[in-house]
Amino acid sequence: MAGAVQSEKLLAAKFAAVLPHLDERQRRLVLGAEARSLGHGGIKAVAAAAGTSAVTVSKGVAELESGDEPLGRTRRPGGGRKPVTDGLKLENAGLKTGEHGFIETDNYCRTKAANIFAIGDVTGKTQLAHYATAQGLAAAENAVSQKPRAHDTLVPNVIFTSPEVGTVGLSEDDAKKADRTVKTGKFRFAGLGKALASGETIGFVKWIADAATDQLLGAAAVGPHATELIAEATLAIRAEWTTRELGRTIHAHPTFSEAWMEAAHAVHGEAIHAPPRRKP
Ligand SMILES: Cc1cc2nc3c(=O)[nH]c(=O)nc-3n(C[C@H](O)[C@H](O)[C@H](O)COP(=O)(O)OP(=O)(O)OC[C@H]3O[C@@H](n4cnc5c(N)ncnc54)[C@H](O)[C@@H]3O)c2cc1C
Image 1: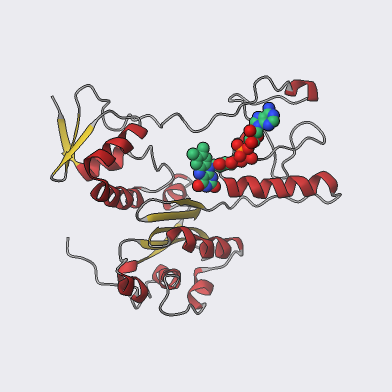
Image 2: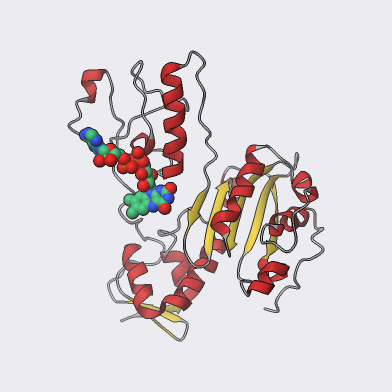
């Protein structure tokens, strides 16, 4: 017997495995749009990548085939990438790998063995090309410098879905798990002149800020040019700006980047261009 559930609910639960670092709301937005644009075949392909068996979707209702795992017990696909450190004889250099074969490093890219540095995926940290590059530059400098430099750890993450996604720093979900008191501000592209003129109004940008100090801690963008827009958020968070400073920074009009300014105002309930809420 097939079990039928609303497609959005099914997709949000199952595809947590595909987009694990997005919060629930962002995942729904991306997967809803992907589902609409991909149709049946595409959804099945994404479902296979997520480790679930066949899914059929008809008139907004998705069905799991018999024998599938219950919702909520989905495995993450493959658990990420694996390091290939077996056979390198690292122990001859005084190095041991951790439980999963990764090489432990600090933020200076130093390993436990003197004068041996490690960078990139093999360190088991964020497995992204731009992070590996930042580590590599720090490692090269530290290998020859008397003044070691820690590499940055604020790493933007982009996904080329439709709509695009960009995230950086603390998410609202992370903040909740860490019992950290934050405030948030969100601005939907539907209220932005450039987005309206371009006909690309799906999505939003969002700030996560410390509730006491107003310092920017994290950001998410889902929508047009989100993979580019996340650069401004990364810069502002790295510079330890507050939402007030960001909100008072003049952004050119009409541009997509104005959304960050508007979302910073929204943290204080002052986003004067916010579009009216849609009726449920
Ligand atoms: C399908 C896919 C898509 C990705 N897309 C993105 C993306 O869009 N954006 C992003 O930021 N990241 C992306 N990544 C991740 C990114 O590719 C890695 O994080 C990045 O390449 C890590 O760099 P690295 O130097 O640690 O490892 P690698 O780039 O894998 O380089 C390691 C090198 O070491 C060589 N090597 C291995 N063992 C030995 C040995 N014993 N002796 C000599 N040489 C050896 C390998 O041949 C390889 O050339 C993607 C990864 C995959 C698999």
